[in-house]
Length: 216
Image (cartoon, rainbow, N blue to C red; front, side):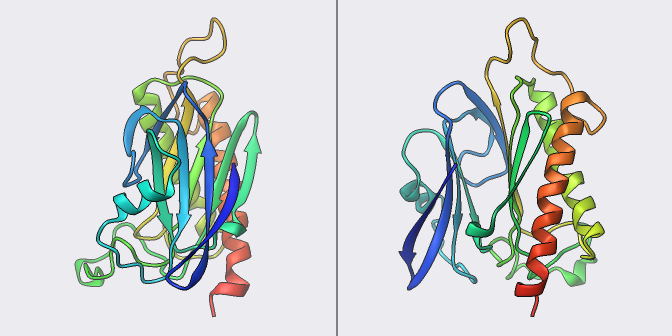
């Protein structure tokens, strides 16, 4: 992973880039490269608060290294990313909480004008060293989301996240020799438990660090 900067819309904006190369499968909710498939890189690019471009996918493509990858946007300061690891699993989170949100909000509390690109995105990239089936990858995304929400609530934020959070889980196409692809990614499976702890640590540290400087 490397951190780079660019000047855009008069602001100095950062981006985190993971260049995995061939041989990796990813599951992601990102606009660019989302779904399940083989991908070679992941980009988490910072944008200005109030981002309003109507071509976010093209924007991400222009910022990426080319080829098949995953691209996410965030209004959080990516140079304040938090990394945590547990038993071979690594998680990196960028945490912005200007607009904390409960997932199940009353209909009247949801403003469609503010939804997709509102400042305050929590983006999470997690990397595991084992191959996983499609079902296990879906399970892993559930685990990431549950661990994120637990960390936010424990840090004192009344929310399950923000309205524009994104996640990417990366695993090798082929795991260790003679080891079949993992069938489970839930929080009580071997690798899911490690994933949950890594994500929980990263998000909680990010949430606790965010509050004193950004919540004013």
